[in-house]
Length: 16
Image (cartoon, rainbow, N blue to C red; front, side, top):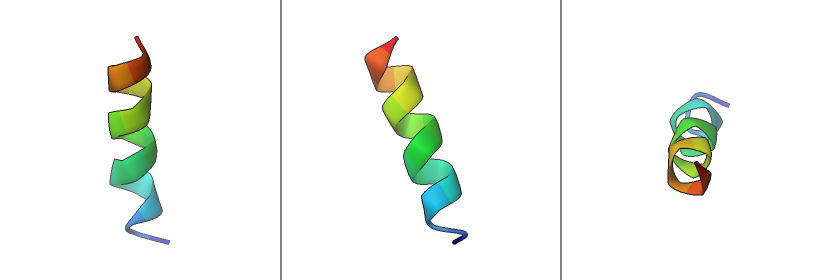
């Protein structure tokens, strides 16, 4: 679950 936190953040930053 901890690995999902940074992954989602990176995806959002990459998407924006």
